Image 1: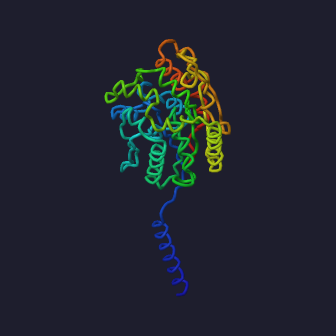
Image 2: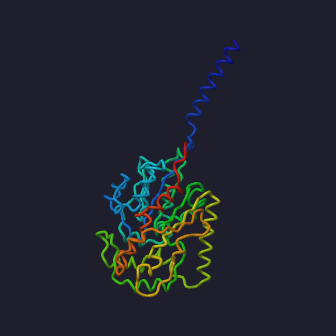
Image 3: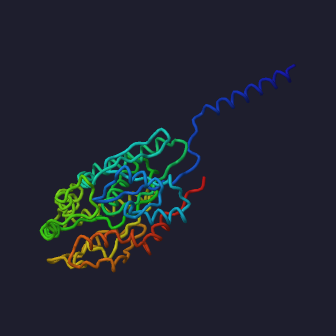
Length: 339
């Protein structure tokens, strides 16, 4: 009798135990790497472009990261759904857990302060993680130009505004990571009056584009440009290196890259009028895990007297040409983490 009673009791305990386990919240048991792509100053995204980007492989004039995405799909074990687009207008996660970036025009890409942009990216990362509680989402942040600066600054929020394990790596491409001198900035404003960016959206008139190109009103650019005191400039450089050191303590990996042929940083390369300082060193941070200066697009700057075509051809060369830069970035990011 006791044996039967004991057997029934054990069976009841087993059933209750299974019921309890079924009601316990499931914690993340696998890791998924998601790549966030950030475009720079003067970029824009229409809803039609966002819809096309959802198909991943699209013409590079629509998506400057096209070649990089293609190689990641072929060699990095990623799927199209692993690619997210940062928006200067923000976005939201839908009921299916998919990130929906808001369209933005080139005014929006130039109007925000760095603090506003980093907050937008931090909110995006947090919202996406919260929408996927059953897996551990780790982000690869890949930013071109101003987009790289935003990604870099957002990594400093790890362990605070964003979780310590949210970011796996940060890749900056031709990004203004260190200060430029005010004298250079003023010279650029005076030397390029009336020029416009070639990728204009309907809402961006030529005057606005000229202002954006000359950096006359973008708060984010002014924040990292108007420095004349050498000590302040050195302190800023030290702060950048401190961001890398702090991020590395959270296992964040940094790749800061530049293009030695980028005439946005040395406009003598495009035969701009006046005297120009070589600011190409500002595209990298010395203590990053990977510091590389590529040399792509040297033959693209054919219109010597037209600064803007030269600027576009050289500033986007590492993404458009991609002969050495794109494979190096793919290698640094790596493939998916196995469950």
